[in-house]
Image (cartoon, rainbow, N blue to C red; front, side):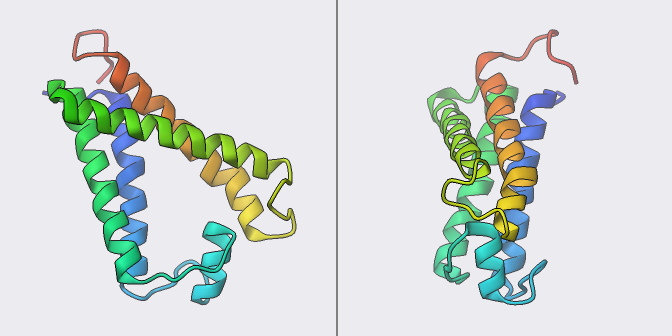
Length: 146
């Protein structure tokens, strides 16, 4: 059984995010030079990149990706549906907050965070929200492109 394209895209975004967090779990600060610079570029604030923060986030991202794929392929029951809905809702909210930051409210246009938010984070959030919502709306059928 092929995975519908919207679900595959949503799961891919979530798994890519989990992978980047797993890289940071090793102590690497790629693509930044140090933890402070990474934190400011990713979150616009200084926060620790420590296992007790990163491990639950990685598990959450992998669980969410799995739920989206299960929802797309087997309908997955209530749990997969609720997790997929949470992904769509959470990504939508983050995307909307990203638009606020894009207008310079709470984010300085002179910082890497501003530009990463504008060009990467916010568009990815809207792509994730859209593909998760499409996965919720449609069931497996011949209408889905493979």
